[in-house]
Length: 338
Image (cartoon, rainbow, N blue to C red; front, side, top):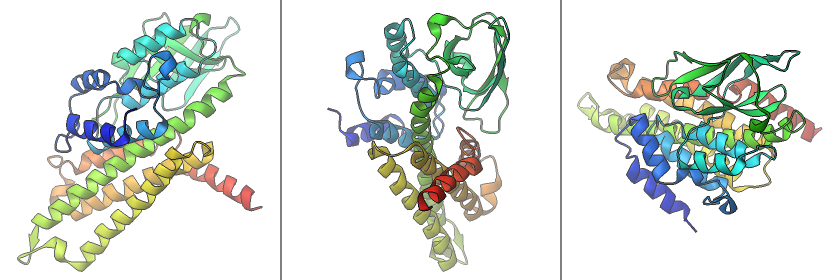
């Protein structure tokens, strides 16, 4: 059995903190080589069979370096195949995806319609690094499906985004005829599939946020120790100490919630969504404070402050915005109290 500290140590050695946003293709090869794509794959299917605490730990470390490799959508796509009861060549797809082929789950809403002849048209958003995908796991009106990127009626259109550590595409369907052999669920099973994938996505994104927030705080504290004003390091000024302490306090609270949810197999979907909402909110706060505490240099593109802020702003919108998640969590809390 692989210990959690072994995974963490291996991740830190493979992706050192001083190398932000390492090259995507090289990182992807390394991720596949280290077996991280198989972390959640059951042992009966040839994987490592580890729990979600292990995958959360990996996503946390990848968040610290603002990783460019699309590990989160890749693992979510693989998870969809694991959950499928209808995919014709399930074993073959599991082998291919765990070995390094890429079939991501889209992480923004889909707006598609089905015609009378069964063809599907519309746009599926949030397909990260679609240029390297062999297929996309997408939610259609007829259920979840694997959609080959080279199929007729399928086009990938890149959407320019602020966060240059990622590439995001829209999957545009024009009269696409779903292949019955590639259906991961039917319409009735789509809810169960969504309920299985949602918590995985929220935990992964929460970990990415807090890994990034922790690295941002470390970088800020080091700068405050070095930057001098009135012949004294600015870290000695009480008001700045308090702001750094506020950043640390928020991170610690969010991390406590993240790990408690990752370890609790009975945690509800809404409880895990709350962890993502808090983590993304904290990441935004920390990056805004990071820029302020770096002063003038924090506003330049030459300094990596902006890389953390851009990652934080995008994470806020993925798999449910902060407002929508807070509303969901709040409604459940009120219902429980009532």
